[in-house]
Image (cartoon, rainbow, N blue to C red; front, side, top):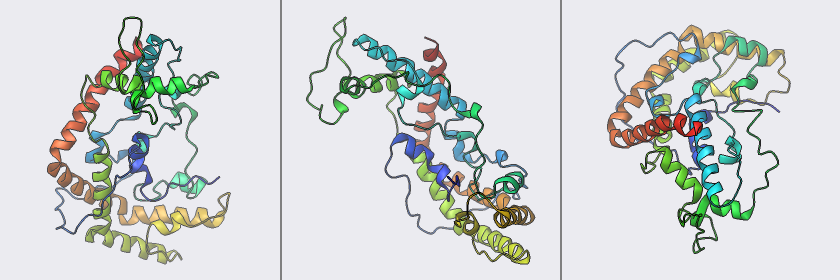
Length: 312
């Protein structure tokens, strides 16, 4: 099966992880921001760190949070008579661990000459070591019962809004929102979870604005002219990316992808788009400082507690 990252999907990964239904909005026109420095020459996509990235988890932080959450949930479940192994997959069933450290890798389309030459527009296979606890996070045949689901979600589980909450041996009742809620509060030092989706909402808005910015449009036009000189007629960087290439990648796709990367390097499209989008993000950070400060405080609290709880 072809693994290609479609337009900007990586930046919305947090929305999927958090179960949020709306992380986008249609921005109204506004003046283009000034750039405080010339656009950088980007040699490696790993260099791309946008201002809003500071309000997101890294791979290590996210995995540490999941492990700590798993231990907290397991301890809570034991208090109510259920042996529930402390594994990442049990704590967040069905979640595929995202590569948050490389979330910007294809933000401006394919930009990796080696990958283009080997895989065309396909996403290279991810190293096994990047997956979280791939050899130890399985549930070991654990069968999730209806009671488990009630203990996990409490009265927040549909159909259990009026259920009687069980008590542990000390007479403490299950929290209204179950062991999941208890774990989340412990990780965050009791801070209420803010709207974490605001980060992706703003990131998507900045990306949309940047794509319509005159400087980015000029860079895309230069890229298009470069591609035309090489025999390819594309007006958008997403056209070759989204084309239904056959599987496996053949010479035509490889040649197109190689030319695509070369023209992005020649026109500095990635550096220009990155600089412009960064400027839009800085503007949005200033406008939404209260919301983003709440997100930062919450994530910082979780990061502080993750190692402590995972070790217990």
